[in-house]
Length: 297
Image (tube, rainbow, N blue to C red; front, side, top):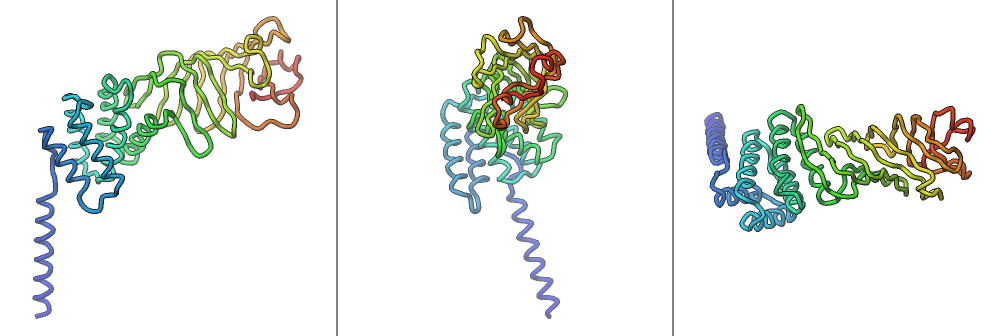
């Protein structure tokens, strides 16, 4: 009798699980009005947080307004079905939708959304969930805080949000083709590269730059007399420094012509002596004049 009761219990539980699995959403409707209703049901079923409820309320309002054109709605439906097919949880959808909402306030949302989508589609089809979530979070930070990279000790950001998304050889890129000023804030100080261009790789946190000017105005030097011109350079944004080759250094207070050398630019707290405010260079010519190696400050 006991065995029969256990068997009956197992059969009932199996039936419940089967019934629930049949009710599980398998595909979002391509009908836009139906999709947003299904998405709300998917996101708000169970114990949805207040933040999730507010997010869905805002998304629904924008969806029913003019923010999302027909092609953008089709893109979002396609992304949602890719994620649903990959059995992503509602928390994964929340990361996606938060990124989309942040993106929707960007001036070039209309022209860049399809480029952004090509990256997302590739990540969903080919990369693990952790990297997908990393890109969603990056997108959210980019448009809510205007930062290219940040951690607990520093942040890198551009002077203006003029860029384009692209996917090159399966690698997500953010291209700054027009000159910008690039800033790093760390240790209570700021490093600036003026009038530079480059490509940022959000998945690795690296920047490849071209051209640019670094000056020592904050250390008391006239920017027309003491400055460095960059050519090609690379930065790992997790650090507040970078190395640049073939730098053209000008200091009209000491020498009458440029010095080409390899430089280390770094934000750090200086020692008590003012001579630590000089930049580091391995040029023998600078050794002759300065007699010491020093750092950018």
